[in-house]
Image 1: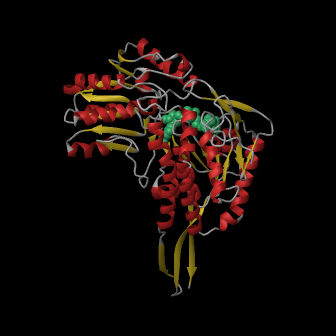
Image 2: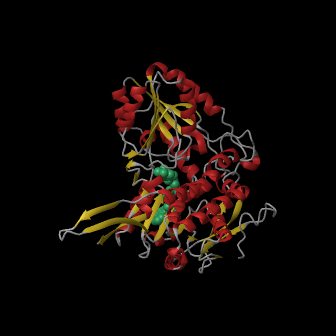
Image 3: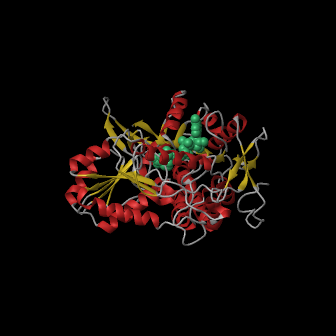
Length: 502
Ligand code: NAD
């Protein structure tokens, strides 16, 4: 193929830009329309390349390729062979670790220290873990007596759903995409991925991996493009797509659910949140500060599991605010490759404008700005990057905009509380329900909080500690369904009962 991929362009001068093509039926192709859009590096605003914008023609071709793959050798491949191929995918991602790292870092601007510890290793692990799950999971059997004195054996078989649309966000591009592609392929489906328009690189690179290890063509397809009236909408409304898995904003989830209702396609949604962090006075203070600092600021606050509302028990409130302030101020913005960099930029100028508009609202609504609240001073060559200061507010009522709405930036509001009942009420007073992080050394209280906060994920004395076999997903407007371990199989397969009379 003639793709100018991130890896093949690695040794070319920085000034040369790249073209990100669709990956359809095992080949890298441009759009029939010739339409492209820019991909810019959020660190300095430089042009990384042009991304082909998919239209109906590309979506049709990708869905048809996926359908043909299901009707071909992939659809008949024994699970043991499929599992071997997925192990090879994981190994090839690991072998090309540096290429994936460079691609992810260029697209997102996130520190190398972060991407090399989380994004890329998890990208490989997502294939291994679900290969193991599908290999080992049993199905049920029931033997029954029949009215005529004979017997019948019922047994369930797992069958793939078919063609899965995978629509992804930009905050953890490879990690969140493979979190869905891994189990989808392990279950024997074919996929069409629509990566975020902000982060096309690693999904494209994964096409090279699929070809290198011998995944049959058409099993993994990528169509680049935007959301509404573009590849995202065309894919999710495509009648030959059997199921849709989506991670992104709640509002987008509503639009996709509308599209999925035509043809009654099942959906799995991982959506937005406004997660509460809760620190009791009996908490291990340093561990709590460390945990909340990560939850509020890591990945420049662009983590769905992040904490933008922090509640701290009154006796330690002032001390906690001061400690988190010094943690925020110690996070040095800088180049991803620089080991001393504590925080990268936001994903784009557009997102920067959104986050700054919330910073303005907090000020207008009377917040006390403990730290931050604007953009940091950066050297000339980085001035065009999407840099923003980690920000802490106090003093706002629960009705304030920045306490209600998901900002998806490195910021949090901290409020004091006086009792467990009060903080449970505050934490639950939101239309969202993705996760919470609770800090206490009182075991009984920790266990109680696990039942009292209305979320899909409750971390006690930890945050973002993930065992990929566990159920992952959100309550209320933070999602529909659970993925992870055998729960992913519930979405990516159907159980067929076979009843044999004998
Ligand atoms: P987004 O909803 O704007 O976009 C996500 C994807 O959907 C993109 O690929 C986009 O092109 C596509 N899209 C947009 N409109 C569409 C439409 N009408 N039809 C089909 N596709 C469409 O989200 P984002 O800004 O990329 O990501 C940030 C959001 O994702 C935040 O709200 C965050 O909380 C959420 N998120 C949730 C989780 C989770 O596990 N719950 C994980 C990561 C991110």
